[in-house]
Image (cartoon, rainbow, N blue to C red):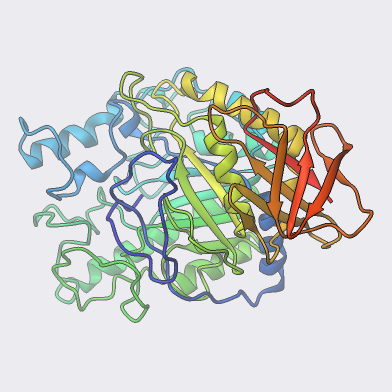
Length: 475
């Protein structure tokens, strides 16, 4: 993931106060272009119904429990073990593949936990910036199907993760990093690695960049043709982009700022859609026909957006696994409140955390995820398959409506640590005279009245004084 702090150009984005401190975020482009392919538009509409997915960062960085990839990048704001010289550190990092042996890998269990948590789609990191491939690519030997895990029946982990989630009826998202710092055709060892960009003169060595373009195309072709039905192709590394595209984020300290780091997205997308008709392409932060939805990171837009968007936010301290003593997990109440806000503003929540080096979900995430799932089982109608409503918020209450516009929903968030009060009220979204307001938790009407522009609800006595993250109502 890109971790450079930038200003969002379109969105005056803010970090929700309930989130953990994040010092670096990824930007988004300032305009949106709707896809013209009808199959893509249909898929986009179906994806907007889902609202909630999981983002799983898993790779060799999980072994020592460090931030994914970014310590390889020569940046002073990314502290690493200073007892090792930079080149020595890179060698140590890339040799972690010899220790990566996830013998407890159980993708069916992953999918079960995810489904029980209410997630409707998954995004899996097939390759992060460090270039370690979590699938059986024929383009590189640097992959999970070499090394200690090679003889495991499920060594091609991407295949089995996608299969397990597909069997649960979930959409499949394929994360792929455009930059590849392990590739000699991106970071050539003949030169130093000054920053996150390619490190050689692409004019003098144009043949080398062409090799990288072909390498990238071939890897994505493998994923599109060999791993079953895939719904989303999600590209990270937005600084690897055509020069003519408006930049939402700076490209770093590029040595060759006038060279277009273009991997030929038109060719890639055409191939992908021939293999996977209707697949969504999210070339994040690169405005144009291959940014089918926008992707703010660790942020929620300040205002409602009408165009498709998805924010990826961590459940844990980092995108990838950290050791238990270093980890900090957000609460189920935080997730539910965040999800309600995002959905009311028109987006999807892609909730991120990393499996352990042994191949399990961290124990610390299971309870909050179960609690989120329990809430969604009862209140999911106010979240799934909904669309935005003009008057979408009043204080801590968020509003959505059914896809056909016939039913409105109110999600009244209860402050973390507080109990359900006897009275709840919101301004606006007043039901017609004589209409009923139903509590989704019981399916029964509640007593309500109108006081000026406010709706005042008497909460059932069975709930008052109880702990609950939010109450949802239909009317």
